[in-house]
Length: 430
Ligand SMILES: *Cc1c(COP(=O)(O)O)cnc(C)c1O
Image 1 (tube, rainbow, N blue to C red):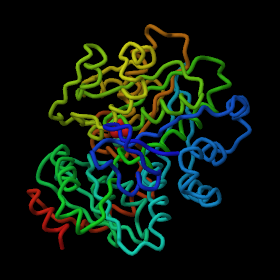
Image 2 (cartoon, rainbow, N blue to C red):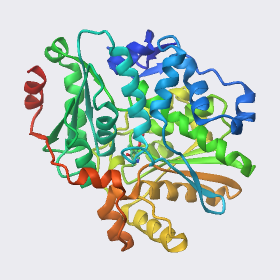
Image 3 (cartoon, rainbow, N blue to C red):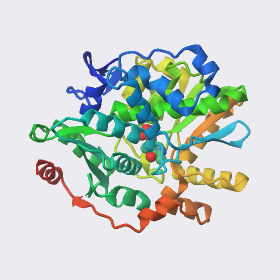
Image 4 (cartoon, rainbow, N blue to C red):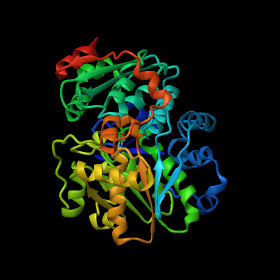
């Protein structure tokens, strides 16, 4: 399987090259040249398959030319050693809990899979790879955890100072070893801009082999399709049309779900739920894609003003907006609507949603208003303790801190404050 650049379908490369370089030389995102549906019996008998078997069969076609089967099985086993429960919340409303991994956000899956692939591809290579990544909160921790101790890989994480939660900051600044945190005096968009500039800066790229661990990287993006299949396996017996609502920021997660659908997974509809950073809901309504500076919200991992993976979704539909609308709806919600949903669900059922999951819940409810006879699953993308202050203050509760979080809260933060691209460049040229 080759991957082509969305800027130029004639530029093709292997999975390995796509992972190691992150983005095509023409700055296009890589996309698989084919998505071949799995055999119908895969979905008919999915209940009989383990999560590891499901993942192996789903991703095999994309990677098998560069990763031998026995290595792929190891990578999958290293990635998926925790649960992905679908929890029934109300009639026809369930949540897919994606926060049972080491950093308690769904990004653990993509980050671990990518770290394992890059570790495998780096074996025997002389030059170290530098993973350069911008984070609005959860990516940094998941990438730091996934790549910790991976030989031949150095990780540099840029995060906006004061704009990530305390727990998120600890997760990305306390590990040490091959992980370096840069605390940027600015917003997430500033961090992302610095990363993009570094990729274009030949002085740096001649000196270091750079790649990205944001969801533009195919090894981080594609494995996210696994848990849509795990959810389908659990919800299939409901016997209803399934709808997924995905709280979205860079739109990598939902796009991976749509790839699972192209693999043949029966899904009726997707809902892309956003906070007030509503570039995509506006596009779906008006047909005009207009990037905006991002606005800070309580669901900070979705504060994205120009979602990088949306081009992949448009491409899946050959840029046919009407066809896309058949399969995707998109809604945006304010912080006060999000807090109200958190309160309502908590008082009705005692279930604690994090602000991102709550946005997903609202999107699902909005869609089900006109499609009540569906089984809806919204993704709980992070554990509520990752957004401790917002959740405790909104629900007037005190959350129990899980042991893996307690452990890092006592550790000392190590970060390098930077104010400008020039400072990042100096560091990368050392
Ligand atoms: C990253 C993140 C999102 C957004 O996911 P995308 O793939 O960027 O759309 C949503 N919720 C949480 C908790 C996240 O960390």
